[in-house]
Amino acid sequence: MIVLKDVEMKEYSNMKIGGIGKELIFIEEKNELNTVLKDKENIFVIGNGTNTLLNDGKLDKTFVSLKKLQKIEELGDNRVRVEAGIDFNELVDYTGEMDYTGLENLSGIPGSLGGLVYMNGGAYGAEIFDNIKEVEILDNQFQLRTLKKEEMFFTYRKTEIQEKKWIVVSVTFKFQKGFDKDRVEELRGKREGNHPLNLPNLGSTFKNPEGYFSAKLIIEAGMQGVQIGGAQISMKHPNFIVNHGDAKFEDVVNLVNEVKKAVKEKSGIELKEEIIIVK
Image 1 (cartoon, helix red, strand yellow):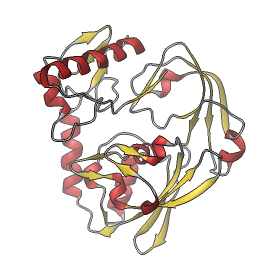
Image 2 (cartoon, rainbow, N blue to C red; image 1 turned 180 degrees about the horizontal axis):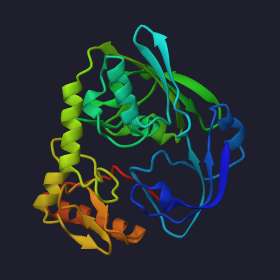
Image 3 (cartoon, rainbow, N blue to C red; image 1 turned 120 degrees about the vertical axis):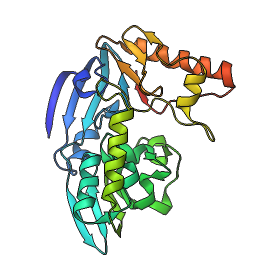
């Protein structure tokens, strides 16, 4: 493991916002998790920092990164065990090499595999849990356990893992053959064309309410383009908040609250954050 003290956490956030973390621990072998973390308090797994808004100032937390856990193991019968730290799009590329189908609709989603499983990330009617057989987690007693998909609660952008603050360590998938390369290229191109990837952002800020699209509700509420400090509702995609370089934590939080208020007044619908806010 690697332990860093008094770390400037904005360097580990895709939004480029964040104060000084008490420590940042890079786990190099999964068996380190139990011994390293059992005596720690205020633990937060940072992942790739793609959907996490970190507070400014002093952060009294032990941040943990699993990005060095990237092993992929073929188990036979199209079953694959993958460690949680791998960049999700590297995993999609791997499924292409092996001619596995199942993850194509999620291609282009930023972040680590563990982060997507933690919140049951998805897109275009597909979710990461669609192809999962088992998830290996570190539970609240710092024990490694493997749970079958049927043993876990999960729904749209929500999982038991998230609710109980477990840590995703590895995931076992069951795939079929027949990788759709054209679909992957289409969706990656669409994300590059429609999302403000040229500026620091948090990905989709709000979950889509059932039967609605947050982006459309934000436009109808007249909030697209609204800016507070260095944070702005993107003109390219209204469900993204971008950092023009000097945005603060409070700028983003205030903007989130203003959007929720405006959408509620216009449509009566209450938006819920998809991003994770760490205070």
